[in-house]
Image (cartoon, rainbow, N blue to C red; front, side, top):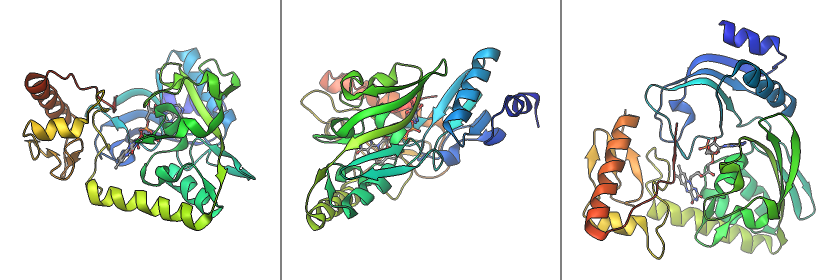
Length: 299
Ligand SMILES: Cc1cc2nc3c(=O)[nH]c(=O)nc-3n(C[C@H](O)[C@H](O)[C@H](O)COP(=O)(O)OP(=O)(O)OC[C@H]3O[C@@H](n4cnc5c(N)ncnc54)[C@H](O)[C@@H]3O)c2cc1C
């Protein structure tokens, strides 16, 4: 064990630690170099220990959910990566209210809600992220957004203090929330759903899932939409209209099925993704005067 990993364990971190751990398998794009130290917390206390340790040693840290909105550079990331997935994933139901741990998967929560006859988050069935990632991104589909159903978020700040942040202070906006800007970790989301007919809710959920299969290249690794929708238009429409469907940089390709998805056809790199993203940005700007905004985060 390296000195770095040993000192975090000695500080009282109880979860698994992996050094120089490849991150590509932990992303939906299947791209990215290693984390200097990957830590998988088993409790909120583990997170507080890790944050205190990182602050004391001035070690940079990041949070990884399901890696479905991330591009990790080929050289990887230095410092600590806290992976919160299938850990801190407890889900507690209380009538139409639910507290979902940050590591729970959004599609699993959407399915549980449907089975209980609770409406509101059916759209989450096809969003392959964690609840933590969904809160940070205010994940959504057309007019539906997770933020609309959240009553409060349990959060631990970078200084290790735990707080409950009510909905009105979360600053939910299109693919955005205060958690994008405030350094800290989402521990859990509290949601209030609407009782309804379980059959109808399940049918809506199935409809969301099949419309994705029809319109998105779900069979190949990607990060979902590369760009957020520009005001009054669709990024996919602009990329298609610029004649860029099928354009490639190495193994990364603008999907023929949905031009806002850049798929990894096998062995693609972050450098190739960035080259393709820059080319598409340039050509769309030249053709239509629209500056596209990236949805994914670059590490
Ligand atoms: C096929 C496909 C379809 C998609 N469709 C949609 C869609 O319809 N709508 C949509 O909104 N998105 C969509 N996405 C994008 C993505 O799934 C969402 O943005 C998702 O919410 C990201 O969650 P994650 O756990 O994967 O986060 P990650 O990608 O792991 O992280 C994203 C950001 O959140 C931060 N983060 C993650 N967990 C925490 C935490 N617990 N505390 C603090 N910060 C945290 C990370 O540090 C990072 O900044 C799609 C992606 C794919 C691959």
